[in-house]
Image (cartoon, rainbow, N blue to C red):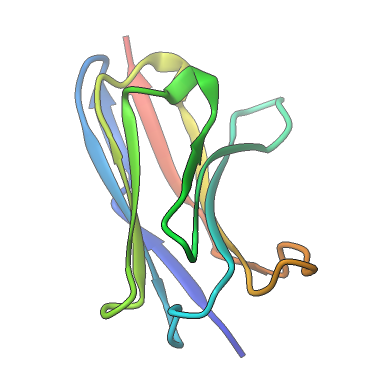
Length: 118
């Protein structure tokens, strides 16, 4: 059973930076897609960034040029470097995995809170 554990959230002022990490309990080298989602209070969960097994990346327009997703297969982790944070970036950030191209997001972490003050 795959487990995902996020870390790195916290409280930061607008303009600041945070780095989120997600550690998997098994090897991630073959995982098709690893992603970061976020959910703000009263809003639906949205896809923030993802990285494929090919290392191809994709970002929500609102975070392009500010966030960078990376993947370290040797450490079984993915990370999300978040710079120039804005109050709108506030929410619970979740790591999620699709193990194959025909799979849904079956595996989720417990989430880590990111709060950006103005």
